[in-house]
Image (cartoon, rainbow over all chains, first blue to last red; front, side, top):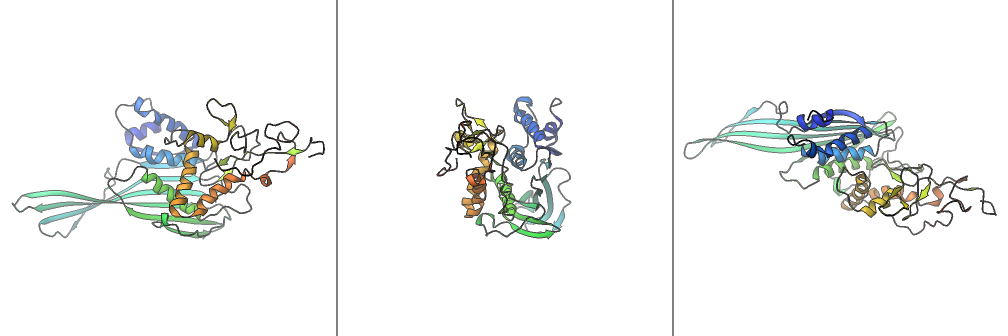
Length: 237
Length: 142
C-alpha cells in the first residue's frame, strides 16, 4: 500500500478521494488502479470506482482542454459510514411494534466538476439517501425482537453553466428522461441548465445502471444547448 | 487549381470527431486519409490496425475493434460515444440527439466544409494518395 500513488492509496484505504487534476493525471491514476489486484491483496477498491468514477471521468476528459482540470470529490465508504447517518427520531409505534427509531443517512458520494473546452462548466452531484427504521417488537410468545428496515433513494443533480451567449432551447420531450426535472435560467450572458431527479434505489440494479443514469442526465442538459448552426466545428454547447 | 493540374490544391483538415458531449472536429492539418472511409486525418488521430500499414481514423478503428467494455482501454471512449448516442436516441425516440452526433461526424466528408485552396498535399499534383479522386458520396459512417 505504501508504494501506491497517494490518490490510489486514498481510494484503496479510505475509499475516498478529493482531487482536481488534468486528464493526463487522471489517466496516470487509472493506469495505477488497473493494476490494483496485482499490487494489493487486501483492501479491494470500492466497486463504484470502476463502474462509475473511471468511465465518467474518461468521458469528461474528452470534453476538456488538455490542461484543464476535472475535480472529483468521491466518498465511497457507503451510506452508513461515520458522519453520514443523522441522529434518529422516535416515530409512533403500532402494536406489536413497541418502538420505532427513524434515522436518515445522507451520502453525497460523488461530486464532479469540470470546465469544458467550449467555455461551459458542468457540475454533477449524486447523493444516496437512506431511511433506516429500527424496530422493537413483541412477538406472540412474548419475546422481544429487533429488526432494521432500510429504504434507499438517490438524488441526482446536473448543472450546466453554458458558454457565453450560447442559445438555450427546450428540446422535444424524451421518454427516456421523463424522470428528470430540467429547467434553464439566464444568468448574465450565460444560461444555467439544471436537471434534477429523485428515484428509489433497487437492491439489485442492472449492470451499468448507475453510469447510464448519470450519463442520460448529463446528456439531457446538453440537449438544451443545440450546436450553433453557423459553427463549422459544431460545438454542442 | 491550374489548368495544368498543379500549383493550388485544397488543404485538408483532420475530420476526426472529438469530444463526447461537446462535439467538434479536430481540424488540425491532415497528413493522410483513412483507408476505410477516406476522411482526412492528422498524425495525432491516425491509427493502425494490426497487420495493416494503412492508417485509419479513430471511428473506423473503433468499429474494426468492436465493442470495448473496459474503460481502461484507450479506445473505449470512442466506441462508447457512438453506442451511447445511438442507444439514447433509440430509447428516447429522439432522433435529434443522434443527428447532433452524426452531423458533426459526417461534416468531415463534406467537400464544402474544407478550407478552400492553398498549398497542400491533397491536390492533383500527384503528391498524395488521396488526391482529388476522393469521392465522399455514398459513404456510410463506420
